[in-house]
Image 1 (cartoon, helix red, strand yellow):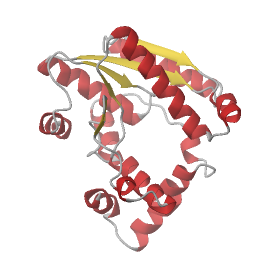
Image 2 (tube, helix red, strand yellow):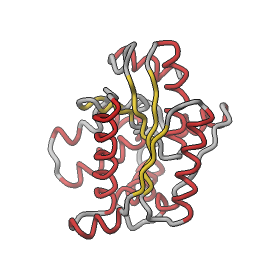
Image 3 (cartoon, one colour):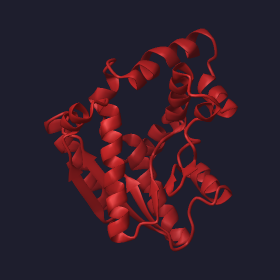
Length: 221
């Protein structure tokens, strides 16, 4: 909580009167972010709303995630929005990866809600581990200096208040505050590039070369 507050103030991510739309997948990261911003918002004077997109990739599990996100938002008294999209069909139609297809559809959904309801900022729950994965992926693809800077804390109206928190801290926050969260099983499938980096490459670096690699690479970025 202190890390989030510090970064919000230091980077001027949020201000009194803001209307924030949080991408709520139902996972630990987004549950943590929603819970924290809901508390901070009452102190700083900004409003929090949530949005969830069902990718329809995991059948009943995806439907359960959608329900869990809606129920969590309701338990906090937050107005929530949901949308269902067929990501696999969209990816095939546009000859892109499922990961990119999901991202495009999510951000299009967020933009539509912003325009309709006047949300001036969108908060996503990217964390320090996500940033390390992105930096490595960009390096391997030869993205240049800009890609090696990693995920920006702010890009236009998109903000990422959890960027300095690692996954272990976030899960601990959820346990301490008894926050329910779901686990997307596709995160453990080695067919996706990001998953290979997360499940194979980074653990190999951490165990064989630098136990503090996540902090090292994000600090360098």
